[in-house]
Image (cartoon, rainbow, N blue to C red):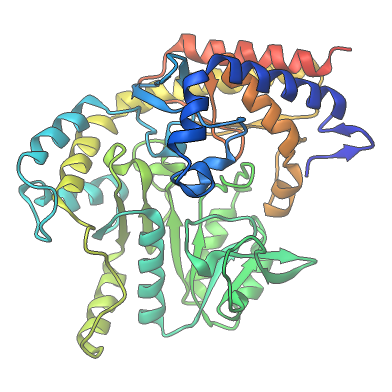
Amino acid sequence: MAEQSGNVLGGVPVERIDALRARETASFARARPLSRKASRDGLAHFAGGAPLHWMRDWPMPFLPVVAKARGAKIVDIDGVRLDDFCLGDTGSMFGHSPPPVSRAIRKQAKRGLTYMLPSREAIGLGAKLTDMFGLAQWQIATTASDANRFALRMARAVTGRPMILVFNGCYHGAVEATFVGLKDGRAVNKPGLAGQVRDLTEDAKVIEFNDPAALQAALADRDVACVVAEPVMTNSSMVLPAPGFHAELRRITRETGTLLLIDETHTISTGRGGYTRAFGLEPDIFVLGKPVAGGVAASVWGFSAELAERWDAYSRAKPAGYSGIGTTLSANPLQFAAMRATLDEVMTADNYAHMEKLAARLEAGLAEQIARAGLPWHVARVGARVEFVCAPGPLRNGAEAQAAHAPALEAAIHLALVNRGSLIAPFHNMMLVSPATKKRQVDRLVKSFGEICAELTTP
C-alpha cells in the first residue's frame, strides 16, 4: 500500500479521502436513476450483479449501463457523457468502433462469422504481422490469456523443460502458471487465485523485475523453458525497465537456452510494432491481445523461425492426439477481417503520432497538478499509456509497485473524475489516449484532476 502514517494515506488525510468518496458517491447516484434501477433489477441474475465479476472492481456505487460508445466517448442510459480514457482496459485502445473496423465487420457478417477455415482476409495477414512485429510465424487465438497459455505449452514441448519464470507483480491473463509471487523473498501462490488446488511454484519461478543477478541465478539450473515478461510492467503500478535490463534479459536467456516471451498486450501503446520494435527487442515468442482487432475478441502469438523449426520437429515426432493448443472459435473470419482493417488502417504512424503527442500532454499536465498540490506522487508513461501513482517514484519492481497502491485514495479519485466527465481504468490509475481523443478531453481530465488534488490537500 502507499505510505500510510497514522491517519494519512499517500500524503492525504484519511478523513478527507472518506469525505470526498461520500460526496462523490451521492453525486454519482443522483445523476443515474436509470442505471441504478437497471443494476438493481435488470442485472440481478448475473452473479454479483455483473456479467463479468471484474466489473465489480469499478469504484462506483453501481454500474452505469452504456447506451453507446464511439471514438473516445461513452454515453450511458441516463444520457451522461464520459470522456473515455479506460477504453475497455486497452481492448478499445484505438477508440470505440474505428470506422475501418466497423466496415470490415459489417462486410464479413454477410459472409459468415465462423467456419474453421481461412477466409480471403487471412491471405497475407501473417506477412503483415511479420512486417509489423518481426516474428516469422504466427497463430491466431481469441484472448491474450489463450495465446500465452498456448505459447507456454509450445515452449515446454520444444525445450523439454518443466519450469517457467515470471516477474513478481506480473499479470499475463488467466494463465494459472503465472499466478505466483514473492513473500519474504520466497516464491508463493498468489492468494487471490480462486479454486487453486496445487502448488504453482512446483513449475514456476518468480523474481523481481530489473534484477539481472536474480535472473542469472534462477536460470542457472537450465530447467526453465521460458521467461514470460511484459517489456514494461503495467498491471501493478507502472514499472519501467532500468537501462540495460532488456539487453541483460536477452543475453542471459540465450546463454542458458531459455526461451523469451514478450507479452505486448498493454505496451502496444508504445507505437507501431509495440515496445519490441521501438526498442529493438528480440523475443523468441511475441504475444498481443486486446486491441489487435480493434475491439473484436482476438489475439496473436508469433515465434521466431528457429523456434518454428523446433516446433515442427516436435510436432512430427509427438504421438497423435489433441495438443491442448487452440479453441474452435479462434482464427475465425470475423477476426481476420477486423485484424486486417486494424493493421492496415488503424495502427498507422499518423494515429500513433497523435496518441504520443496527447499522452505527453496528459503526462505533463498530471505531473504539474501533483507538484502544485505538493503531493508525494509521480506519473509514468509508456507511449499512449499514462498512469499516476499515489507514491514517490519511479518504481523499480513488483514489490515497490504493490506497496505504492492506495486503494481507498485511488477509488475516491476515480469516482470524482467520473463525476467530472472522465473515465479511467478501475484496476489501477491507467489512462489511454486513442486516435479519437481530443486535446480538450485531455485538458478537461487534467483540470478535473487538479481540482480533486486541491480538494484533498486544502484544509
